[in-house]
Image (cartoon, rainbow, N blue to C red; front, side, top):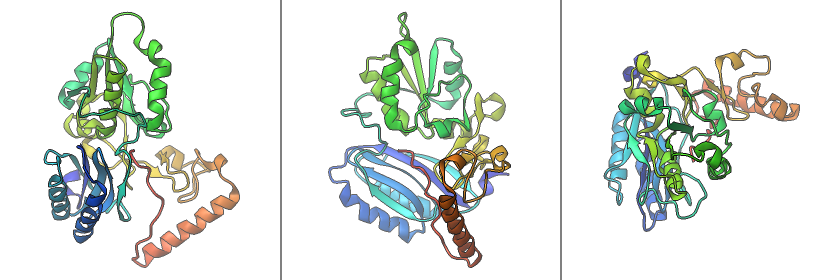
Length: 316
């Protein structure tokens, strides 16, 4: 499949910039998205903007023009990919305390951040035996793909990352020469804060995959790649592979975890109802409710009507 031939443009974006009144930006931004048929989720906070949107090429271009016109957003970080169909059910613009929630006061990526490493230079950095490679994403994301040799913090939320690092600092860094620490995430935004956090903790040599996994999978040929598996994305595509081709995972509408092709063949998997990971976590009464919801979704689809299904996890 040639991703360039797919009809829907998907834009993952963020920018750290101080907004004096981020609440005042919400209504005009939402109206722009609605006018141009763009769907997805955008987060606005005092520290900036973050989110993923999808639509026609012209619609995405118009919305990005609007965002670039916001204070400090001219150099907006955007990563593009394609989808065969609209991967979102609706458009949401939410007001937040943080555009990516770490929960640590006074962490400012505009003041201090790790050294950016282009995808073309990433392999050499992480092949260095003195480099400690850390995946900053959540456990369900790491489970479907990561870089060779990466440490998995097994966190359920990005809020857990600071405590995880502080608890394992001595184990990770040792007592000898200060090592190099390289970190990565889906699109780069979580590493803006995780690298700033490590520098605030006194770690001097900290690196950050510029553009995140998505940019690496787009730029680095598969035969040269150190990536293993697929990359979880925060829309109904669920995952992408090398070249940003849509992946093989489905989304469990009960627990919102990605479901591999092998897990889809398991007896505990029922589309829209359960998967092997959550089957033991739900009651039969709950599954009956999910089953009815799925039936309504199928009826709506057969009638050509929109139906809001399971909500995707948010990268924050």
